[in-house]
Image (tube, rainbow, N blue to C red; front, side):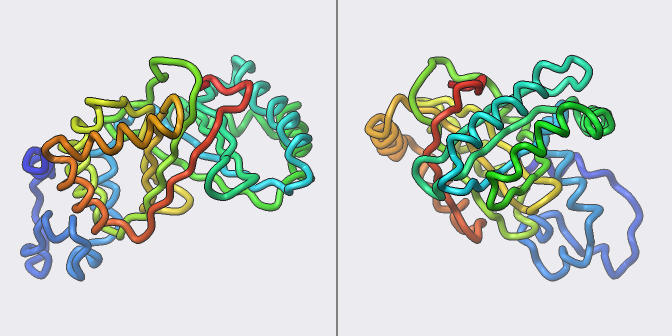
Length: 265
């Protein structure tokens, strides 16, 4: 996989001081790679991304005594976006964390690429959607948004069965390691797919950079434990875990449940 990704880089004349910079050095975040700049990073994103859609990952940290009110306001706001045909926004999932950072909600929105997001944002100011969004704010402690794209080998897809729990795994990568991460997971994902199919995977492009998310669904925590243990028995999985752990600064695992209006539930 890595070999054919490398072959896609266009050949072009470069100054002699940069001629010795290899793609391998870029992957590992070497000193020389950092000097190449953002242009190569953008090339990496084009190589690993599916490119068809753009996803907004919105994170709301809610005041503990305002959770019930927030849920009602969030339903009004996000279903309003979904139901407005002019915005062309789809909801990929709306969740509440129950293990991990408490009173935190994750909303994943799907836009028709960057131009679709531009069009939607132009229509929202002064509309009922802006008023509905303002109604959320009194219940929030903080909020953050990332724009992310899907990995080409893990397009977002609905779960095969309803119910259960969702696990969101978040990885803060070392700068310059996105391609190596993608290549390692592309090889290792088949070991996990023998037991559970991922719901989606994204990497950030705007907001907190070098961040990767994987979303999984399980019937319950016991099944999650058993499936993860069985994956270790498959060739290639241990190597994937070992390599990817070396590429990440931090790793988080959140157990979430879908909100009543979430399409994933």
